[in-house]
Length: 181
Ligand code: GDP
Ligand code: MG
Image (cartoon, rainbow, N blue to C red):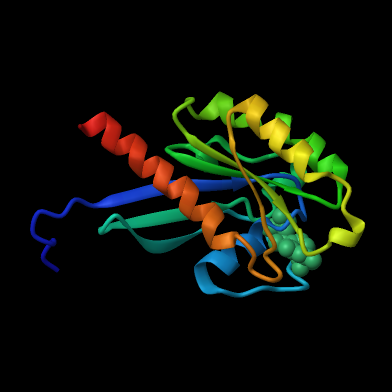
């Protein structure tokens, strides 16, 4: 197929990381296919989905990678991170241990990716307000300390899922443009 006249191709690799069962796979399937699975299983092996988005009239392909269960064995490979220009670091607002792990995930990200990688801290499962274990303020504070964007999402009821990915992808796009211009 012919390339669009004057068109550049943008393909951004985005990784989703965080402890097991925080909702990474469901965030991705909600974003890419608008699907949610109550009984999703952690299958082993790296997977990604490509989603085409429009940002300022430019066609952006976001290739979003899912750990697909590798994280259960603390064995996310360097290949997973290679070339990532954006990252969503996800915790579960109902499980403090997953919030406490965020720093470890950031350390891992920093060993594989440079500081220009756009980062979003994502507190997922906000539909479970009645059993919340991490406050919104704590999430915000950590994000500020670590220089991350912050959002709370629900893959179950779709709240803020598109927004979470869009903000990261827009930031990547801005990074690319700043370097180009
Ligand atoms: P992963 O291991 O991080 O990929 O997590 P999964 O996407 O497999 O989700 C783990 C479990 O949490 C599954 O039982 C999901 O149905 C559930 N889950 C994921 N996102 C949400 C959410 O936003 N709200 C609620 N209530 N449950 C969720
Ligand atoms: Mg998963």
